[in-house]
View 1 (tube, chains in turn red, orange):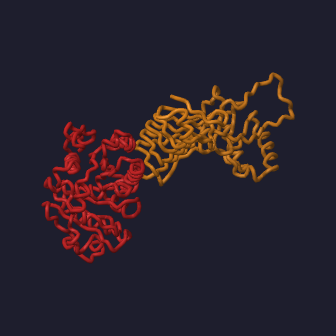
View 2 (view 1 turned 90 degrees about the vertical axis):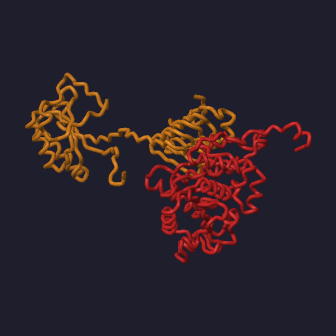
View 3 (view 1 turned 45 degrees about the vertical axis):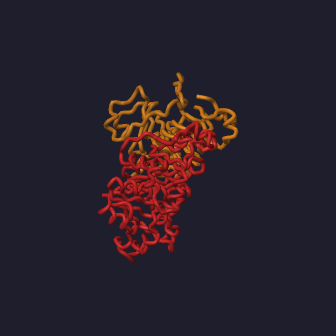
Length: 269
Length: 240
């Protein structure tokens, strides 16, 4: 049985798709056969971040409607072994996702894959509920600002009440907090919530802190998951998060203000 | 794990209490018939408790009294005796012995014999208002934004109540974490209800409809342990 991971947040634009791409890629790099599913029907983005937009022929909704088989719709990643992408449909809306259809696809994928990473759309409506309903693990992506934190809190309530595990009285979904777009300088100036603040409000274990980084935007535009950029702090932070997701211990990095060196200050770097 | 099949609840039923003052069954029968004739609908299958605390009866007399009552259309549901004079035949009468209502009436036996015109039977309608305690609801996980929890008794939250969440109770509310959302105690009007929390950061607190918003709370106690109580229709926030 595959482990179903949902990357969710409630709020839009916090980095769900970037995180899904990075974590899915990271799991595959560790040798775990992984599939990334884009649940954002109508606002398909994951294919762009993964750089496979030109190879999309069939999509998730086609598979649900039996217009295509899973193997026809799955796109094999060119860079990373053991990584596949199931893109969303751009021409349909979220009502195309039926619980029975989604369950069937997930059951089918469970036979072949170790990890199924579901990239949730923003909001708390049907699309988001479908993405989280079958999850075993939730990665709650949160920016260090109050509205994002509150929306994450809301989504945690939905995970606890409207998921399959909650409805069937199984052990609850494993919840992880992923703080993205973290800027230690702005935290120290009081413009941003600190990791400790976010942890205190949401009261779930911390999976990782991804620093705000130009590399993320660059990677998105190039269609490369940022985790492949081993030079960038964001890529390294995602790699740490993947290790922690797999049960390893990793110290938290990139959460303190970097002291600028003498030359850097001199050169205004 | 389904509670749908049945529910156990406390309930208060109005019953008729028959206080027996003499073992004279013929007199009782006459008196009862007279009373029943006045309001027959009221007595038809009325639940009846026989109280023999003022008069001792033998088992035979007691059973005679029961069958007499049943013939007259009363539904005997139990009996009572003085706590210090429970008859030895209590197990043999096939009827539940009910506890005495606490301190309802103190009968001082008068030394003078009762006047002859006193009826042998006194029929009283007794409404027993016993407080039936509602179960406490226990929440072990954080109450998240958008969630609402209601308890018909007390409410205990072992975790936090997030901003945008709402907890309501007819009784007291205890929160062993931060209260960042709304807490409303005594929602059915219990002015003695209180709210206790380990860390007061509430959006709103209310007791029996009297509320206070976070702006006002911040000036009194903020991010500290606090209790909220109602004193003369005014909310008071006190440290714990």
